[in-house]
Image: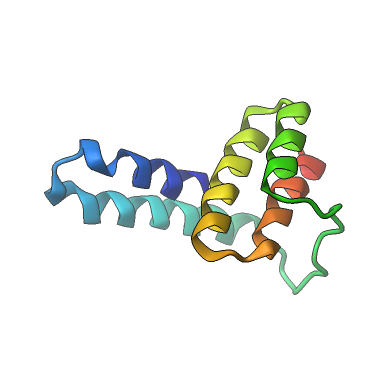
Length: 98
C-alpha cells in the first residue's frame, strides 16, 4: 500500500507520460509482495482497538517504526478517499505485527 501511495504523491512532479507506467509498476510490486506473504487461507479480521484518523496516526507515531508510520499515512489517505473505517485497522494491525 505504501508504494502506490508514494507514486501517487510524486505524479505531479513526473512527466505525464510516466504516470501510467509508474502506477502500474507500484501496483505490480505490491501484488508480488502480497502474493508472497498472504495467508494461504482466509483469516479473521485483526483485533485492533477502534479509533478515528487522528488516533490511528498518534498510535503509529507512538509506535515509532518508520514502516508503521508510512502505512498509517497511506491508510489515512485511503480513509479520506473512501470513508471506509475498516481501512483504519490496517495501521494498528501493522503495529501489532512489527
